[in-house]
Image (cartoon, rainbow, N blue to C red; front, side):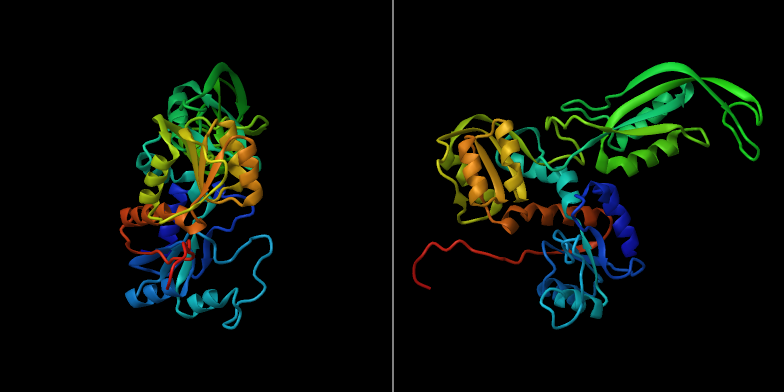
Length: 376
């Protein structure tokens, strides 16, 4: 299949609009018209990933972390001798395209939420939302009565209408709409040049800002009018963090069926993430009832975990000051290692690509190890 088709499939599952503004996602290296029968899936662009793609005869590597990053600085040069761009240069030489699915994946991959929460025996209550992201929009559209349900179903299926633990949340009120079709138009109602009065419903709902493109596309496809009257407003209040909203928030927070000791939870964490050890902040919570998880760098989610009443936040990395901030708010922070916390990216992306008909190879290259002493 063409890499453009792979990109379209990934866009449906993790719309690029849900990525953070500072992120750099999508096709970063290569040609969208290139065809490939398979893809190497890895967290980072490595020589091992390129070697594997060459050996398989595949033309695509799908990474979690962007190989050209951060977006704001850009890439000043691509040369074989530069440590920052050497692998990009090599991918170009080998004719291999590189795709990144990063914060858009994190916000949309509810499969990861399910895998981690089930592995830790946690009932998910909501998602973690940091202070620097996750704004909502309000959509208002005017629809003829005959098509209200069709439009409602279309926009909600595209991700609108989720409020906390409730979905399909909309509001409608009837009124009279007026319009006059101009020359060259083909109006759904009325005649060209004649003022038409129609019974319409003002239909409104909310949506994550990152899903705007898909929701508007669904709206326009379901609405019968040639020219659709709709408005989008920025919503000032922040999302509650309740419920599993697609495209809004990271990881999850939830509750264990009954309080467990930290040692018991730690054993499950090590088994699930296949790690020998981890960093943990002091003081360690003696009993865990509520916990949160966010992959990668979780320093900006400590406050969200505290607000959700979590006793424990499991993440990839947080740092000294974030750990200290967590301790002051009663949250123990457990750091798995950045890559180690993102292992479910690999299996989830594999499943996504295989469902589209691509062969896949997972490449999990260790980047760090916790040293516990002893002889070599």
